[in-house]
Amino acid sequence: MKILTLNINSIRAHVESFIEILRSGKYDVIMVQELKVETAGFPHNLFDEYGYNVKVLGQKSWNGVATFSKYSIEDVVLGIPNYPDINARFLESVIDGRIRLINVYMPNGDTIDSPKFSYKLDWMKAFTNHISQYLNSEEPVIIGGDFNVALEDRDVWKPQNYVGIAIAAPQAREIMNQWLNLGWIDVWRKLHPDTIDYTWYGYRGNDTVGKKQGLRLDYFLANPSAMNLINNCEIDITPRLANKPTDHCGLILNLN
Image 1 (cartoon, rainbow, N blue to C red):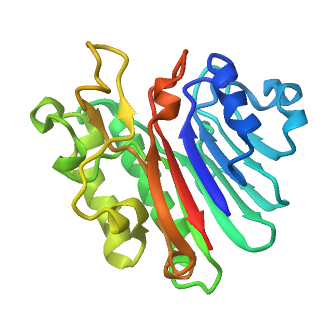
Image 2: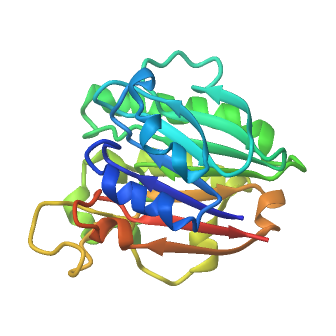
Image 3: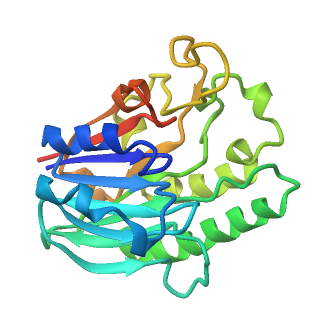
C-alpha cells in the first residue's frame, strides 16, 4: 500500500496538479490538508472518474481535510472526540478494515504571543489524549499530515529566523516529543536519521526550493504495529514544483 500526504493549500486553486496526482494512479491512499472549501462545496465531480472513495471535513476559506482511498473508508471520525473545535482539522478512518489513518492539519499558531498559539497548544494536548489509546494497539495506526511543527532546529533552514514563531516554539516541540518518547515513531526521521530535508518552501523569496530554504512540517507517525509494515518513506518535491504549486512537498509512505 502506498500512501501520500499533501497539504494542497486550496483544492480549487491547485486542482490541475492534484488531478495529475490522481490520474497517475500511484497512490492507494491520499491524505489531503488545507482544502479551503466547505464540506458541501467540495468538488467531488472533478475527481469521481479516478476510482477513489472520498471522505471530507471541509471549512469555507480555511483548513479542511480529505482522505482519498482506492479501498473502503470506514469508522470515520470527524474532529477530535470530546474536543469542541469550529475548525476542520481532523479526519480519522479505517482503510480496508486493515489500517487506521488519522489525517491532521494541526494549527499553525502564528507567534507565541498570539491567542492562536494557545489554541495550537490546546489542540495538541487534546490530540495527545485521543491518540494515547492507539499507541500499544495491535491495530496498525498511522497519523499523517501537516503538523505545523518543525521538531528540531535541523528541520528549519535558518533557526534564528523562527525565534518566537509558533511552529518552532519549545512548547509545541515538547508536546510532539512527548508522543515520540512514549513510543510513536517519526517515520521519515527513523528511516533518514542523518538527513536534512524539508517539506515546505515559501512562495516569497528567490528560489527557496533551490536554495533549500524550507521547513519540515509534514509527518507520518506510526505506532509499533504500523512500523512493522513500513518499508520506505520519502519526501516528494514534485507537488512543490508543479506549474501552479502548493507550498508543500508530498510525503510518501510504503507499506508491505
